[in-house]
Amino acid sequence: MIAQQPVPPAVDPRQAFQMLKTRIHRQMVDAIDLSKAGQLPEVELRNQLRGLATHLCAQQTVNLPPDDREAMVREIMDEIYGFGPIEALMNDPDVSDVLVNGADSVFIERNGLLERTDVRFANDEHLIHFIQRLVGRAGRRIDEVSPMVDAKLPDGSRLNAVIPPLALRGPTVSIRRFKSRGVTFEDMVKTGSLTPEMADFMVACVRGRMNIVVSGGTGAGKTTMLNNISRFIPESERVVTIEQTAELQLQQRDVVALETRPPNVEGRGEISQRDLLKNSLRMRPDRIIVGEARGGEVLDMLQAMNTGHDGSMSTVHANDTRDALDRMELMIALSGVELPMTVARQYIASAVQILIHMMRLSTGERKVMRISELCSYHDGAYELEDIFVYRMSGVDASGRARGAFYATGYEPQALKRLSSRGCDIPSLMFAARELNSNTEYRAQ
Image 1 (cartoon, rainbow, N blue to C red):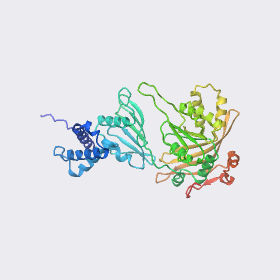
Image 2 (cartoon, rainbow, N blue to C red):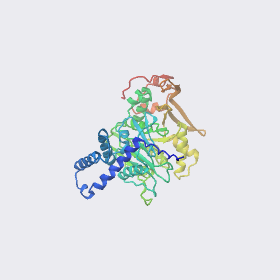
Image 3 (cartoon, rainbow, N blue to C red):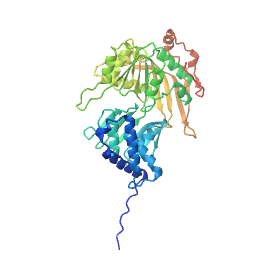
Image 4 (tube, helix red, strand yellow):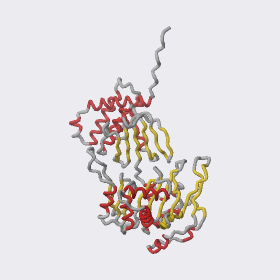
């Protein structure tokens, strides 16, 4: 009996397309005179590259159907100048994250929910070259010596990549998209993330120079909220922003944006958020905005809030409002300054007035779960009062969260301070009731 030969596994057509594209791309690299290419104007170089790609795709040896040639040429140009196989995903305004878990596994987050796509890379080598090209544009490097990297892409998106030997199942890429148009309170009310009353209160707190901390988990919308409320900082004030990766989009005229610097290959030259925060105090700021407090810089931020920089803001990773306070205590301990726990808590309570907690629900929707006032620290505990809350009761047939926003009936102590600064809020806004989230809203 003749032994049967094993049947070779079928090649995924999308992966075969990517492998062919990689081969044509290499042929183009071999055919280009790099010494002359660098002397050509950008437009002319692109035209020549497109012409070469079209010529190679039309050759009989490529055996590419006419209908697929234009798509191949377009993807080759994306490979050279854009985002390669994920170009279409990066151009989709509804996609907030692109997650590559190896050459044949690409996910996206759309409207808060993960979806698997049919996008493929040719192989792991193709994916590694793609990563190296993107991080190289950002002035970073990734290789076996440094197999993990954070980088900011030219469009402002954040990229994190991990390659073998750290990534066991192949190179991994996570891209947090940068949106050129910020989400506004009007948008958030329309999508049911909060109510007009909550938006009006937050606007008054910003204009009345309350110190605000926005808490929430990864992807909950903390930076979006910080971007949103910062719109209402008066034009007459000087603002200094401090971020690890620049994402804030302040529209005021007098804004100084500072961004941290990672260490170089030798492990030197790092500029941390704490370094920038200390320096910002010498820059005559009216307000300081820390994109995200992650470590010892929280102590310097609280000092700024306590010493004349009212109206400062930051975000903190936390699962709940009280957890945010615990996290800030931990970060004070990380600062290296040995403060008794009682002193640290009193310091937090005297610096922070308003806490806003965001959450991304299991349905993908983002909600402002609670807006709270930190009144004081007394008898070993924070006096924390919820002003507005969201209570979820389930999920409806369409997969959307079922629940409602409520005013708790608590009237904030901050009202007197806000009134003294020209921000009068009617006390009826805080009467205990369910809030209507299906109304039109326009920020005043």
